Image (cartoon, rainbow, N blue to C red; front, side, top):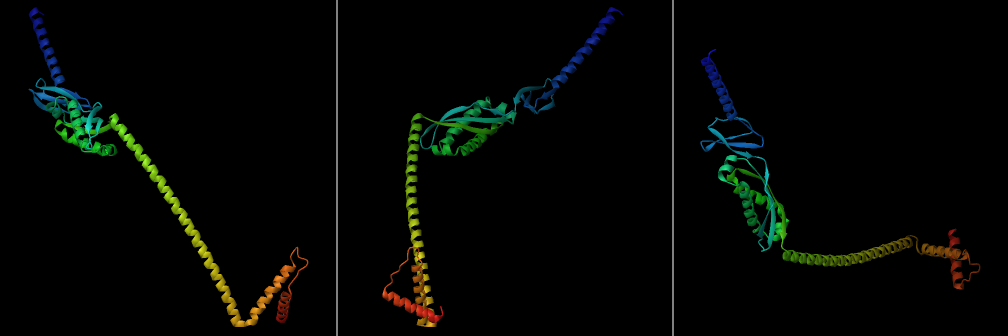
Length: 297
């Protein structure tokens, strides 16, 4: 092989090698593998060409250029603290934190330069505006509602930036020392007032219960007396009916029977051996015995 043939062969091989390198470079530049947590913004001649989603994508080599690689992971802004004045003129210091993620990278990269700073500034302004509409007590008591209001306002404000606000948090609401001391005094006074009210209500309740007890006792006594009176009336009625049915003799018989029972009880007492009975009593007992004898007792 002559020298001219060798040079020609080397030249042909070099062309093939360069062609292979060119093809490899074209393939390398034309194939873009996008990670799951990112999206690529592609430009052609300085203008937006496409937004590449995660996975394998193809672009035109040397014409299309990946200009921005944007993370679509959720982001948390650093905790921010800003002063705000409530509707009742109380100065508070509010600590906030916001979470967001980019959903339209082409809007984010072409409409705002520093998205984190822009969102932080927007949140600070909205927090001041919303707290200025509320009294201090409402800020403390309705924190959940305030958070939802701030989140909705931020979402409306950043809609053109291609982001989604996933969560907004009010971490703390701090007061200055003078306001805190005044609120502590007010709280102590309120506690003392509630204690006095509770004590007064307790005394009032005790008096009411005592009156109820006395009324109940009086009612029960009245009921007992009424029952006793009803029983006496019933007994009297029974005796009256017996007299009406059997005449005076039946009543005398009952009296005589009671007299004999009383005499027997007196004579059977454990310490009674001698019993002195008046003459009138003996005569009455005699009449009783005669009446009982006549009855066959």
